[in-house]
Length: 158
Image (tube, rainbow, N blue to C red; front, side, top):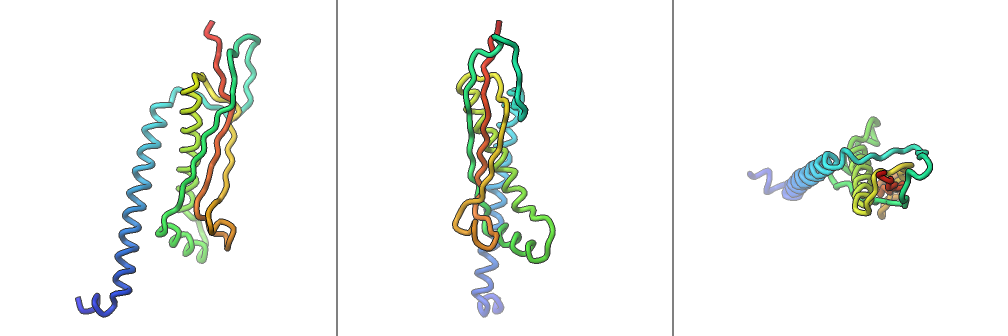
């Protein structure tokens, strides 16, 4: 107890890091759970990243759809990523950041296509950008934006 009182600044730092880690982990797990349940619900909806050719008269309507997601990294993971950059190796914190952003953007694009009555999305494309105050300085990433877009197609049912 005496150590904690004598080193209050260090103790406060340790508490804040622990709370930050717990809150970030909880938010990330909750987001992944949301992504998984929405992906299961949309499993039958087809999305292709290749151009599709349809027989004459098969396509009733086509239109562009898009979905965008901006996901930020928490401070604890940013600290771990900085340490990983010093020592080298895979930066798993950034991998999960990009994975969540990509999957969320695709889900939002699919939701728009379904809302507008599409049967599938063809020619899927993904664009990624690092954004935030620290994005252009010293190789740090504040947030990642992923834009998913493609051509939604409604087919003639006859």
